[in-house]
Length: 80
Image 1: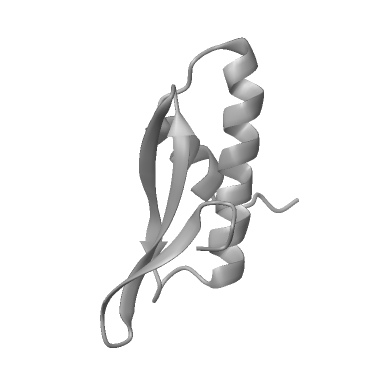
Image 2: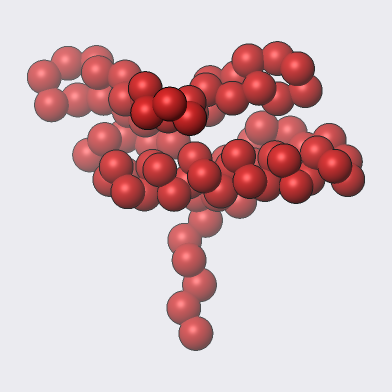
C-alpha cells in the first residue's frame, strides 16, 4: 500500500492488479484500476489521485457512485 489506499494485489508470478481502497458513502470500497500488465505504477497513482479528488469534490455537491469515479479517472487524456 502506498499510504493513500493504492495497492498491488499479486495473483501469481508476474501477474496482479491495482486496487484503490477508499471510503465511499461511509463504506470501504476496493476499486479495481486494472491489470499490472496494462496499467503502469504512474497511471495507477494518477487514476487513484483523480478518483480521490473527484470523490471529495463531488461529495460536496451530490453523491457519486463508485463506477462513475472509476470511469472518470480512467478515461484517456484528451489531446488538443
